[in-house]
Length: 280
Length: 280
Figure 1 (cartoon, each protein chain N blue to C red):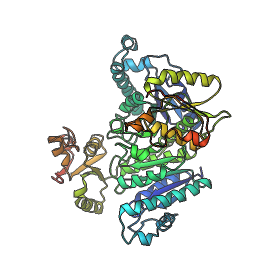
Figure 2 (figure 1 turned 45 degrees about the horizontal axis):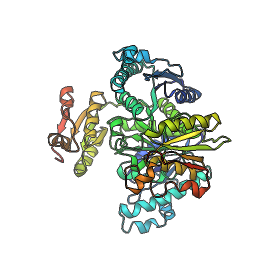
Figure 3 (figure 1 turned 180 degrees about the horizontal axis):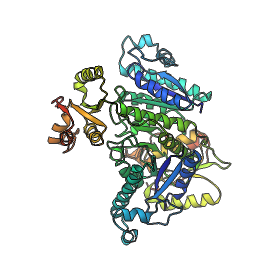
Figure 4 (figure 1 turned 90 degrees about the vertical axis):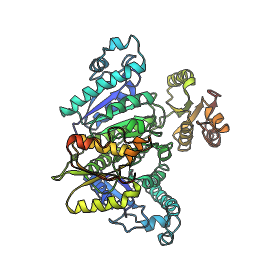
């Protein structure tokens, strides 16, 4: 109760649906912070942080964006502004969850924002694109996708139920008391693939005997990158890089490419690491 | 509060994680009904509906499945049994949401079950596969995917937080008071594509003037199929099939294939329909 949920929406096209979400969330005892990411049209409901503020924070005044309003020019500015505003709210403990809704463009913008937010922070995206290849939207983050099933074009009894479910979900998540609570010993990241699993399981057993928690990532490109992001976030404190197949895949442009930064993070941060050429 | 959440899990491999989810859900004041979909190993926690019951309901005794325990043989039996059990629970108003977690195989089995459940009924899947092409798992249903980010191999501080979020989400959703409440006039389904949008928007305006709610589906194959499923479910009571491009895509094996049943449902059910060859 009394948590504050960010509601990121394009208030020119999705004002009615945003208003419904706001009422649902407030009906559960939480508060909303409505951030308008719309550009061209006139907002149909009032924002707490309006689109002029978002654009300005993104580096270009809205009046300037409106001179030549293309999505290609406006979207990165609105995303950049929203990210700055939301990160400030989170670091001031003034926001405890985020919800958004949209079609292809709305999902792109909102998930671009969500991908920059901390693991564990509730992120709910109601999307027409949820039943498709969502890897570009989610990437390595814990973004929860709610299928809207139909288009999001005004309220109807089905969309109301789906939005009510999504509002209840983000409210429930924001009110959990559990956080990512690392114990006294560092959490150990392990990167693994199918053929190295017997060794990884043995390592997990041995580490558990010494009271270490382990977290295993599948070495398919996103796995190793998620592991390294959690190092940067201070979640993972030591690493057993057991299947470094993402490196050879990067060199030879394979499917499981871990990207150019892979295997550099632990070194940069001074995190203890053991590296094995498993699965290459 | 006091809602009953189905927790579908393979208790031989995911007992520890299932037990954590159970405690989270019960800590929120709801109850769990644990259904074991595991086959080969020994369950590590107690089920409310055990795997013998599930297999038997699926048509083959577990002892028989264990003689030649392949996934190909066992999974359809366990899914069939779970579907029957869960549908009975729902029709008796004894279950108000479902949650599951798993890797590739666990996600396949649990979402096969979830795809048969009614729209609006809370369905939460914590999955290692959530940041990929999830269309095969979700298809035309409102299944909510929670990315586990890491593998689900024992508890750790990150997975605990993600499971706690998922438990809070399904509990929140199960406790919503809103349903899919159709008003006095039937909800009108509209199938539309990009180039027919100006006409569809005009139709929505005209229908709204006469107090009809409309629900618009994108004619990409899943859209039309979702619309027809909602006819069968009694949600949609009339249809304006404005962009029948899914038919030509079926005939010529295009990407937006609506399948062999498309355009037959309204006729079979005697639902009023207007058909236009839009977008073909």
